[in-house]
Image (cartoon, helix red, strand yellow):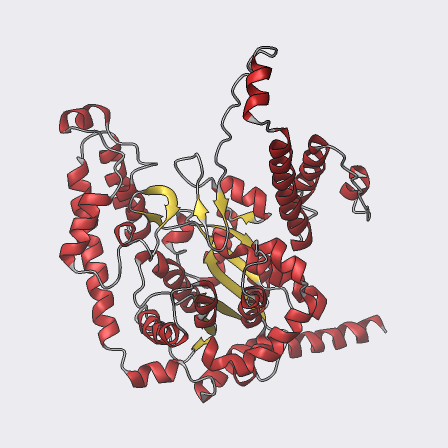
Length: 506
């Protein structure tokens, strides 16, 4: 059966487990199949997740059945030697749309994520190809591997080389009024992509999602957060002639036809299997993934793309969003749409360490774009996990561990100068630079960065916001039509070439 699958032939594997070990073995086979490059569907992932839950349930019931009453246990002690204590099970790494936890490790294992999610690593060759097409240096996020994996990025690049158009899609869940630095990473990189390729961009604000998934948030509250977040996003410097920002609550009338088509192709069991929903979850949670999937298809933006359904889409996001877009790619095939392509970033870590990402719900783990210079200084000095030594003497002697040092890891994101980053890293690693000194450098950079963002946001008036959130602007249509000119000219040229080839053949 495995041989048939590896050869690309269809194969059905039927397990009839009688005991827990047999059930574990069957699930392990599914896990191996899922990790193989020829099986990357959400259905396989769903089966794996559901069987894993069954195992846990069966093991729990088995343990319960084996438990004895207190008198029976006392009687049994005289006849049976005490069993050796079981080794505690290690906590596994968990990365999904809602949880990022390294488990027993000190940091997220991105190699494991590449294997588990079935994504491809971004290679130096791919980065060089981006530079060749855009005729500009790659963003330092790309150069340093902070955006580290992708799905079909090579298809986007090949299309661009041929003059074909594509659009960008990213988003934000407005759970709070203010963004933190971790939220800015995808937007800063998306701005680079928009500038480098000169393409349209849609940004989804999932206020509906936050209402469904956050019990403490009211509908009016998340809608208000969406508008506040939109001003922060505009402050990143996006081109207003090529950018459409929308709240799901405002734009749902245009999204809904596409979302319905997606929902019809997505079963309830698939939704539960992919996202881990349980019986007690509200039904809105199971329906929402289709809403996040819909903007990946150009049909969702009829005014912008003139009703075209075949425009390619590239989605920059953090790797924890992959379950959504793995499902989106599966549904795209069923609907006859172009599969969206993805480019994924690593996480901007929490101040306390790389075992999890920066979180807006934990004040002490984050640097917010609303923080004052004093707050930034206090948070870095007080909470930023150090890979340096306890004393200055030890630091001079032993140096710092850059892999776990949060200050240095933040510098990898916010310091654009490669030579300066290398110099600081080498001096800190060898003990020439003390922890307090490198923290002071980071504090200065972050204070300037946040101050600049606050100044730009203050210039985003309600009129500017309204412009970005108007889907029917003529400038959006014009931007896309200008992008299509090379594509149309290329098609015309190809037709002429084909005519000439045909005449020659005759």
